[in-house]
Amino acid sequence: MSGHSKWATIKHKKGAADKARGKLFAKLARQIEVAARDGGGDVNSNATLRTMVQKAKQSQMTNDAIDRAVKRGIGDDDGAVYESIMYEGYAPGGVALMIDVLTDNRNRTGAEIRNIFAKMGGSMAEPGAVGWQFGRKGLILVEGAASEDDVMLAALDAGAEDISRDGDAWRVTTEPAIVFDVRDALEAAGLAISSADSTMVSSTMIAITDTDDARKILRIMDALEDNDDVQDVYSNFDMSDELLESVEA
Image 1: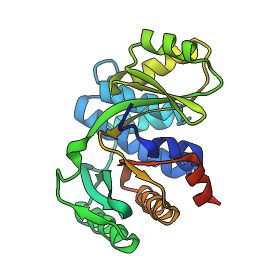
Image 2 (image 1 turned 60 degrees about the vertical axis):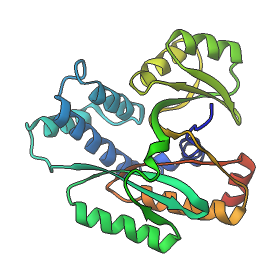
Image 3 (image 1 turned 135 degrees about the horizontal axis):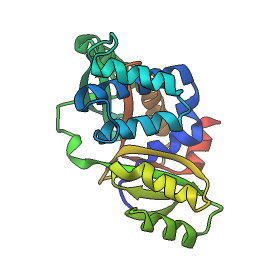
């Protein structure tokens, strides 16, 4: 499948999502709170909340922490009022970026994002400049020891759209609303899951082959994701495992 999220794959391989578990839980709690505020606190009638709760449980967030976030969202507990913003920009090499933000202070967060771009050689873009090429998809990585037939049978039966090889793993693509249902079906079939998430993928990919460009792109991606208000960063670059290993070395 063209346009898959290479960054989602790289984050898993680097362990970036778990390098600061406290920060990860804070971001998940904010996402749950906003989902509950916008659509109500019942996971059976609020598909977005159900997805966020499943994502939190996958990351081993406790039920108590999840419940507190839901209560804040529906007004049963004091909580900040967050605004959802999607910033757009370019990393070095002309790589397109979408930065998903939840903030209680638009001016502060906007200044912080612009500062990261200014320091690391990227540039902000006008709304819509890069967003047209991105769409939301579910992305599941299945450990590569599984056979293609086993992955394909279980995934397609559960409603997945596409199965392809991604380095030493199988990449399963789904509609975003059913990504965790497909993951559960794959696990029930005895397949080992490396990661599952709802992410943004681009229809236009940029192949990165230069080590210096690769290093700059990963630095700006890491800096953006390290911001407390940034929930996720999506991009359209493609990078080989060999180049990634070279940059990390």
